Image (cartoon, rainbow, N blue to C red; front, side, top):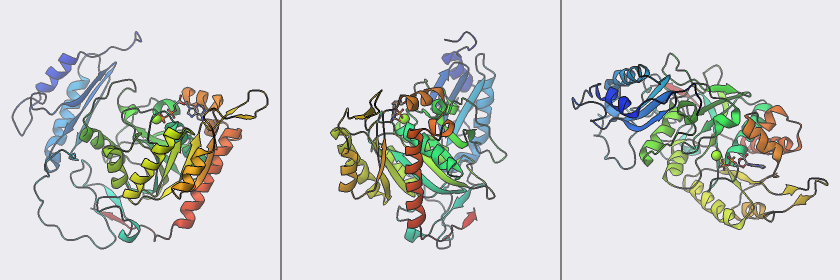
Length: 406
Ligand SMILES: Nc1ncnc2c1ncn2[C@@H]1O[C@H](COP(=O)(O)OP(=O)(O)O)[C@@H](O)[C@H]1O
Ligand SMILES: [Mg+2]
C-alpha cells in the first residue's frame, strides 16, 4: 500500500450518494438501486448507473452531481460515474419508441439512448457487406475493427493484441486498441500508462496516446487491481460505452484500425461484442496444446454465427528457443494451430515463440514491437500484421462508408 494514497470509506461513499435524489423514485441513489458495480479503491471511486433508454437526459445531471459528490469525499481524487442506458439481456425491452422515418438504405442509426447519441456520428456500411444484424456498426470515424480473441485466458491474447496494434502503427496505419477485457484489463500496464482519460466538449472520452497508439481501457478508469464484480449486462454496457463513447477519431483524422482485445471465452459478452461491432474480422490466438485447439474451434464457431470473417490463427508461445543455439524446443508440441487453421478454413498467420524479451516488455509497459521493431519477435508480428492488412485490402470490395449525423 502506498503511503500517499488513501482509500475512501465505502460507507461514506454510499451515504454521500444516497443524499442525491433519484428524480424518478424520489429516493436516494443508493437506496434506489442506481449505484451499481461500485468500485472504491485508493484515491478513486466510481460506479455505473443503468437507466432506461428514454431517461438518459434526465439522469445526465444526476451523474454529474454524483461525480461531484464523490470528488468532495476524503480520499477521492478521481471519480467516474458511467451513465449507461444500454439495457442488458436480462431486462425487459423498453416501450416501443414512436415510429421513426426509415433510414436511407445503407445507413445505420446511432444506438438510441446512448448518453451521446445526439452528437454521435455513425459510420455505415451497406447491409450486403454487413450481414451481422441490424444493430452492428463501427464506432464513429473508425474504418475497420479487428477482434483479437482467444477462447481461454492466459494464452497471450493481450500480448498479441498490443504487438499487432504496434505493428500496424509501425506500418503506418492510424491504430487504436480497445481493452474489452473488462474483467482483466491489462492494456494500461502493457502500454505503461495510468493516465486519466479526459472528456471532450462532446462528452466523449479522449483515448490515451501511448507508443503511437490510441488506447482505451476500463483500467484507465478504475484501478487495474480493483475487483470488478459486474453482472453480465453491466459488463456489456461498460464495453458498449467504451466502444461508442470514445472519440477514437475525427472526420479529418479517422482511425484506420481499431484492435479489440476481446474478453477470453465464447460466452454472451463476446457474442454481443461480435454482433455490435461491424467487425472486419477476427484473429484467434492459441497456444499449441490440444485443449487450446478445441477452444479455437469453438471460437471460430462463434464468429461464424455472427458472419465475422476469421482473418487467421496465431500460435503464441509456439516454442522455446534454446538459450544457446536458438534451436526451437517444442514444449507443448508444435504446429497444432496451423492444422486447426486449415481445419476451420482460416489462414495460419504465424507463430510467436516464448520470448523473455516480449514478456519483459509487457511488464515494463514498453511494447517490444514499438521499442525494438528490429527484434526477431517484433519482425514476426510485423509480418503477421502485414498479412492481415493484405487480406483486408484484397478482400474489401465495399464502397466507401457514408456518414450520417443523427
Ligand atoms: N510469446 C510469449 N513469450 C513470453 N511470454 C509471453 C508470451 N505471450 C504472453 N506472454 C506472457 O504470458 C502472460 C499472459 O499473457 P497475456 O497477454 O496477459 O494473456 P491473456 O491476455 O491471454 O490473458 C503475460 O505475463 C505475458 O507477458
Ligand atoms: Mg489479457
